Length: 116
Image 1 (cartoon, rainbow, N blue to C red):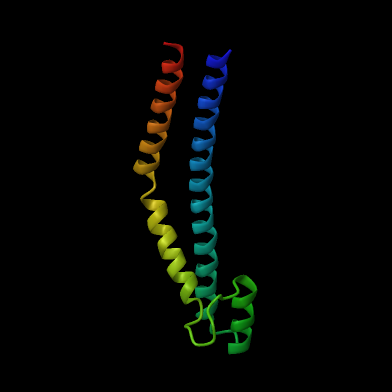
Image 2 (image 1 turned 180 degrees about the horizontal axis):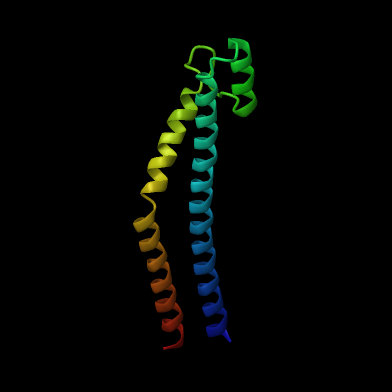
């Protein structure tokens, strides 16, 4: 009975870890895609000469409210965050795959060790 409980807990731990890894990767890529699209739209509005300065400002803020304070450059923090997310998303593949493989192998070894 204790072997079964230990095996179930070991497998559950692996499933939760892999689920957290997949959830985090999906969320990171989703946030990067959403922020990148919003910043592209803000940039497009910036160069739209058919709008007045006030209209451009209102449309930009309707799409993405800047988190920068009065002394900062508008959307500076968002551009920095987008750049960080882009780098993280593009470098996620191999480290995530190796982490997942490590979790699977250690889970198999732990569950097998309980029964041997």
